Length: 283
Image (cartoon, rainbow, N blue to C red):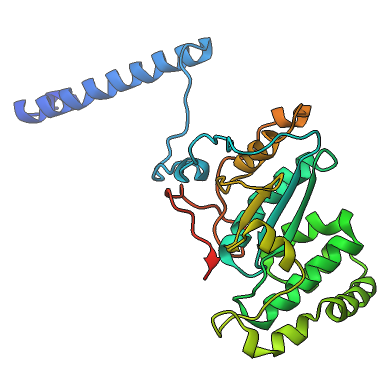
């Protein structure tokens, strides 16, 4: 009877070499896994997931922060600064500034006299005339709710839902709206096209005298203690400008706010760093 040969004896030299190489690699791999397993159990090696997704910088890093704010040097100091922001309610750049203004106002509310006023002409049709008067009445009748309304309106542009969100008494505002129109002749000025600025823009009379006093030309215009304040359109820049107007700044001035600018127009998005010139709405 012929003696049976083992598996290895049946291999020719070439196949034996291949089998030897494969066997060696498998042995080394097995030993490697055993060593890694021992190290892992001892805590010397830690495994982490590998992400195949492209690396994307956080949004805050993609948006260029404004230069460090420098408060205007020309603002007089008082114990309780008076801060007035003149806007047109549908001006994209006025909305941008209001979004920066609201957090600073909220922080310093009760420490300074802060409010919103309106440019003496409108550039964005009847809806702007109506919204200016609506906001004027909210400030007059529901002052504690105005900031909430403003933050909502500058984001959504939907005054009806924002009135509801801010829990504003619509009947009270409607009465004020009617009385304000009668007192200042708002719609009479709108309908008198012979008086429109440059024949194109209706006069808006509620804060006409203050516009003339300060020389307000367009939206936005920030006045602090009676002086024009040129500031960046970020919450931190607005805060620092107001705080520079205190004789003795309150502790709230030490609280940092965002130094990112918001996008112009409605919406909560943020914009890249602005250039040296900040656009506005004006003739």
